[in-house]
Figure 1 (cartoon, rainbow, N blue to C red):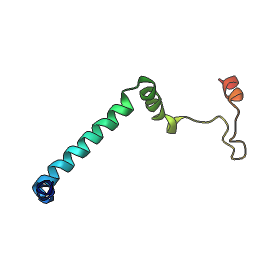
Figure 2 (figure 1 turned 45 degrees about the vertical axis):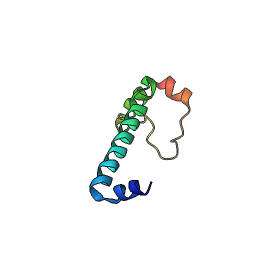
Figure 3 (figure 1 turned 90 degrees about the vertical axis):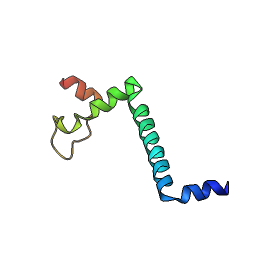
Length: 73
């Protein structure tokens, strides 16, 4: 076990190990986000949020019921 710690403390060995750990973590995050179709579609729909306009622009009336939104469309 002591040999492993000596091997790991050398900079040329620890960089490779850290790179592998971060790369595997990155790939797992990508799989988590895009593997499920429902989650993927939901995330794709979020990209249009800044471009969606509300019909009601007044500050006091920002709370609009879902029924009112569906009636307007």
